Length: 126
Image 1: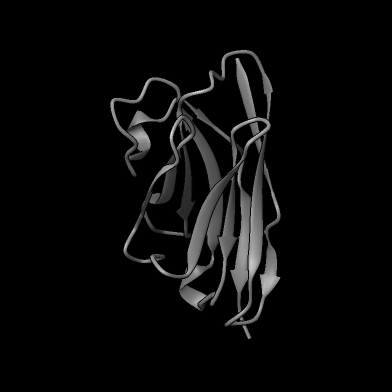
Image 2: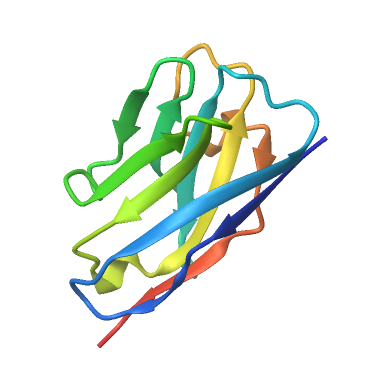
């Protein structure tokens, strides 16, 4: 069983930046997997925003964050970071880290991910 824990959320003004981290515990995370960041705002569906293949750094972004957010990984444990810049009020949401252990390819589709964290809140407001 794998447990994921996000950190780094908070409240910022528009144009600000935050960096999210994802920690993991438990058994089962192999070295080659997809690690994704998702977000969900109240009343909206969960949205995949960035994913990285830890075995080769293949990265995909949603159009909504392309050019503003950067996903990277800690090489020691292949866990993802999400650097968020130029934040907008519409980025306000709960942000989740997720792991897809058996990817055919990395996708921004929530249903293919096997493990999820509890989320960290990001609020962008003036």
